[in-house]
Image 1: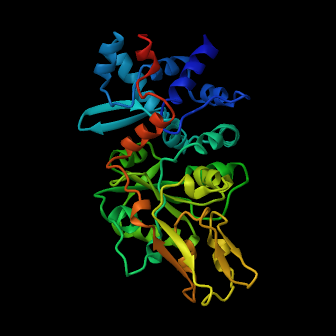
Image 2: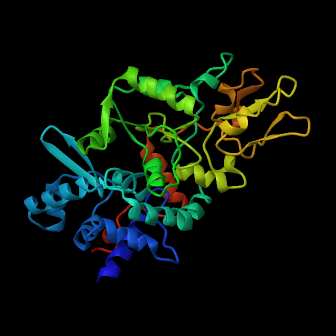
Image 3: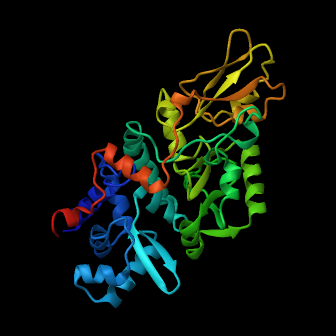
Length: 364
């Protein structure tokens, strides 16, 4: 039964978001066995991404409410289910592996689990992501935006931060993972923002802390200075904002390996260089996370638009203002959906998947 239940769990996780596809090595099963007991795997198979009270789950499974409530809470504390607390009531729902269960292991990640996850991402998700749009979008760093054109609030990291009543900040799971493998970088660690119920879940589990708007904006400034790419969830009102690097971030590392990263990322901007102003200082080469900039025969910078993801990091440190960030033509611009859940549903549908639990579909 053991292998069967974990294979079913893998198949269920593959229904969600960017998926959790099987591999030839079977490393995906090793990860699941590390995270779940058989009983927890069984219960996850009977959950959906729709939040439910313990009583609702117990009634559906015809089990004792107290026992189900205890099991759901234990799984939420292990980062295997998402939890929302309101007043005296808690609701629980299934989470994707990415973005979800993997990120929820922030405080329990160790070198052995980090190695398994890194091997898995290299073998499976790199291929999976190359066939679809990832669940984040790239927005320009604030200082790279020209005053001559307007930017929608969802395209401005500072406006996203200002729009939130409460905001939590947490360490970057990608940099934690790579650090455990001695493959990390020296960029800031506490750079991931989460709002609303996601922020509360992180704080409740000791994975993050609440910050006021002033501190959040200071963190954003440090991220820009360090050359991190702002990547909010792909929604008009995103519940989270990551600040990513090409050394550690799973999504940027995946994009970097693709011959045409611009085809995979949702972005509405691109960098342009004025060769007459460029002095060939090469600062922009180090700032670019996508290796989109090279030096031409004339000693001036060249931007490969197939690789440029429009973050604007090259613009903010160009002392001679040779680099500028331009908006794409209106027909090429993409407005995000209203909610991140719609992005997750679209990703699943593009892969021919259903968000209905397999156990429900099979009448289990």
